[in-house]
Image (cartoon, rainbow, N blue to C red; front, top):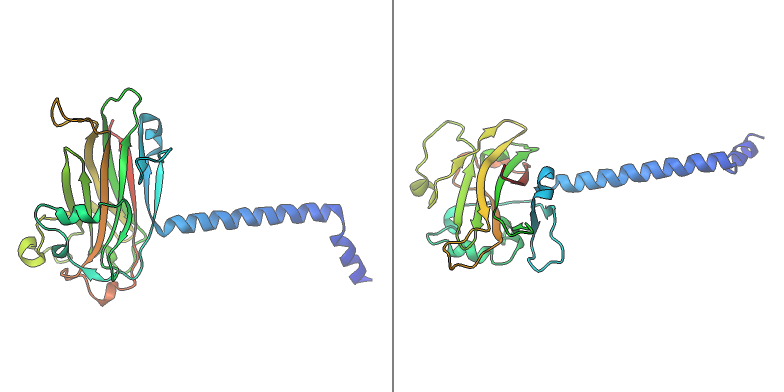
Length: 256
């Protein structure tokens, strides 16, 4: 009978082997899809592959037993509009408060997202290390990149440098950032932009390990923070961008 033949097929060794490898292949594909999908929804910070052997690493805990080549920060959904005038003031004490704890920071109401970590100089001989930092964006929908703001804040004993970045205004209008937006730092424009992806910046350069004076204590790490918010004062911030998406990747490399 047909049914008996069908049942006997499932009992053969050959079928069991084929079924096993088919199940294994399916499991691998599912796991890979989950991994790639998970990273696509995150803010990814990584050391460039060719810099892994040149003594820089990442961490959110300086006391950790091992530093890392990559950090995956959870993304943020349902962001509300905000403005830099509420959290950036002269002296940057408010920034220091936000970044006092490393890792992820989300302001109540999803108005501000920040992530703080350390770039560590791991050279065995204690020599200085120059690092370059680049940030790219991709997977933009609903022109969210037009209204979003990115601020980096590099902090060490020698350095306290906040920088703000924004896309060019659609109409090319000249903005008085202090008067119109309440900024104390004039934003720089994204270096490249199009519908799908672009570069926020690619020329941030720092040296880790230097001292302010002969008697100063040598610091072999730099604290680094990235802030994201949707600028409520921007003309591009309207109902059209609501529900939009954007993905950021930050790469740290040894300066050649």
